[in-house]
Amino acid sequence: MTLTPLQDFANSLHDCQRCKLAKLGRSQVVFGVGNPHASIMFVGEAPGFNEDRKGEPFVGAAGKLLNDLLSSAGLSRDQIYIANVIKCRPPNNRDPEQDEVETCKPFLLQQIQLIQPKLVCTLGNWATQTLLERKVGITKVKAQAFHLKDFVLFPLLHPAAALHQGNLLPTLKEDFKKLKEFLDHHSKPAEPTTAAPTSTAPVLKIESPQPAQMDLFG
Image (cartoon, rainbow, N blue to C red; front, top):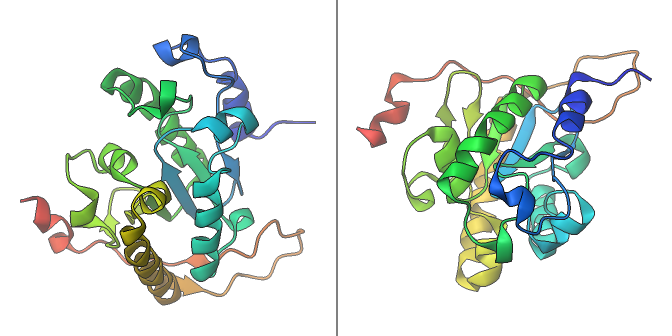
């Protein structure tokens, strides 16, 4: 069986030793999971305990909440692709360190290049800052669309933040409503195909970026 470029890329990182996380207690590399042809991709920070054990992103309590939020936006996990900036669990779930981000970022960018999503939803500060390439707080940019060179970025709070701070949950739910509005506005009917569909994900048609989009950064 011939491997797809994405599968081949995943195999190449199977036992990655490029940064110190390889020797700090990780069980396995957590590459990503989902529809390899997804028009929508979600990017989180790094694997936690459950993700490290199972080898998939967002399978613990934050994953369950994410599933509920996806449903509220008219999405399901088989329609999207989910990955993290960091592919290995940091010890004790600490924040990623800069050298780890710099090592793993090219792998995330290559995933995006291979999947070619129209929309990338970043979950939390780390993913948002990594792809925006700017130190900006998630609360300043969340639930807004930013037109980058190859895709539109739509930052969101990380589900884990709402689990740790329950007062953030209504905000997170409201932001996913804004995501649904964005998807409804930019979706078009899928073209008929004779091939067996792997997903009923929305087909997105997104207009060219407006020059004012990045004004908030000065």
